[in-house]
Structures are given as structure tokens and as C-alpha cells.
Length: 177
Length: 173
Image (tube, helix red, strand yellow):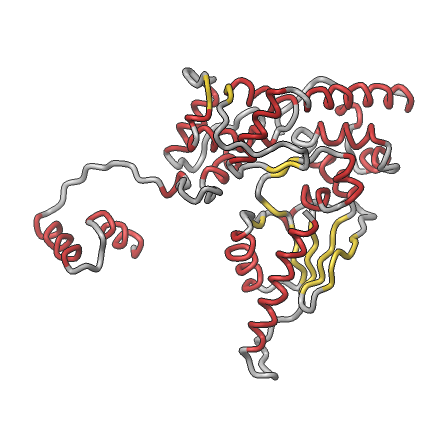
């Protein structure tokens, strides 16, 4: 292709990029992700952590304007589901990713070219609000049966004040393994 | 972004100084000054020209190579200083491909940290050749801006495909 033709085409593409960046879907998505501390931009967009956006708008923005949105979108959906509209149902591929992230799976499906490991990384990062726990830190209920002497030992350790609850005793024992 | 980087690495320089002050003057364990090279989105955001003409988004990871690296310095930088600023060091920073001919501009020379930025054009070449899908929009804007005169030539010279950036097809990487 001739240099001039190439330049003409690349300028057309850049023009479209410019239009896409002005799209409300992109601006709202960035306002939310910036507000939640998941993404930053040199555009003048006010961080708005309370905004509610359509999940399809976020997907559009990730596909057409900034692929990094797709990298952090699963984390946003996991921790701030209430900020998203039309999440029922989510696209099947995205739901699969969320399922694997919730389970802290070692491997999981990629999403729109973003490797699972990358999405998992952000899901396990301490978030700006400090209140939201990384996925890895979240507790899941588990029913276990113990011998009475083990249970008594756990109770006495809690009673001694060394541990705040029975779960902490078991976690400390596992961490020592 | 420049101010943030300067604040972060001033803190690191001060930490190294404080650490060394606790040791005897002839202690072998004294930490030596380090050179830090900022790569990736951060170098673009800290570059006046690039940040002015390109729209840049970033996640919270910092791509930085620390020369004469001491694990203790890396640990303090990542686990304490960057964390305080809501950032983290990308553990794969050392693997980022830097095209031949790249230049590093001195941003700040502290007592214990020499802070340098990879030149914007080389950062763009690296992205266009090694991570073109994630950076397609950015590279299109950079090429169209005309502000990086050797960008197209360097992308092609290092195996990049310019046609990809004007095409509509996308692929998994």
C-alpha cells in the first residue's frame, strides 16, 4: 500500500477513535472505573464511584475504545455488581470468567483476548476503597466435621484470647503446614 | 504523572539513605544507588508530548526496570511505597521488549535513585510489535498524529504489521 493511502486510512481510523471517545458509553464506564480506582486516564472525566452503567455499554467501550476496560471489568462486576445494570444474564463467557474468579481458580477462560491470569490479578488486588476485599481474601462457607478433642482444643484457644474465632485457629494451623 | 513518579522515587531514594545510615560506614551490606527505567503506559503519561496528543488509560501497574537491583529495594518499592499510591510493580517488567535505538531521558537524579523514562516512540514501537491488539487504538492515534516521525518505519523494521492497524480484523494474542 502506498504511504499516502496508508496515512489516509489511519487518519480515518483515528477520527473514528476520537468519536468513540466522545461516546457517553465510554465516558460513563471510565467515570465508574476511575471512581473505583481500577483505571485512570489523562482525559478530563470526573471519577464517579456511585454511577450505574449498563454492562453492555462497558463491553462496547472495552471493545471499541480501551481494551484495558475488559481487563478490569470482571473485577468491577465481582465487587461492585450494584453499579451495573442488565447483568441478568451476563454474556456466558463473562459469567464463566466470574465463576472461575470467585473460586480463585488457578486457570480459567480468557475473555475477548484478555488472559484469565491478568483478570485474576486485578480481582486479587487491594482496591481503593480499602473496604472491598480481594477475591482471594473472601471467605466461603465450608461445613467440616472434627473430632471432639480437636474441637475442644480450638475452643480453648479461642477462650484463651489468642484467636478471635474458631476459623482463625484453623487458618493459622493451615498456614503453618 | 511526572509529579507522582518523582514523589514515589524520592521516597525510595530517602528510604535507601535511611537504611544505609543504620549500618557502619564500611558495612558491605550498604545499598548502592539504583537506576530506574520507566516503561509502558507510565512513560507515555509522563512524557509531555505523548500525554498531550494521545489519550491514555492505565491500570494500576507500573512497568519499571530497576538496574543494579537489590531484592530489598524492590520489596520496599512494591510492597510499601507503590502500594501507598495505589500502584504495584509489574513483575514482568524485566521481560518487556525494548526496540534497538531506544533512548532514556533523565527525569530526576536523586541521591540514590536515577529516574529515567523510556522515550515515547520506542514505547509505542514495543507495544505495536509485541502487544498490538491491546494497543491498536493507541497506535492508530500515534501514527495519525504525525508526532512520531519514525514510528511506522521502526514498527515495520522490527516485524510489526502496519496493515493490521488499518484493518478491521482482530485476533487473540
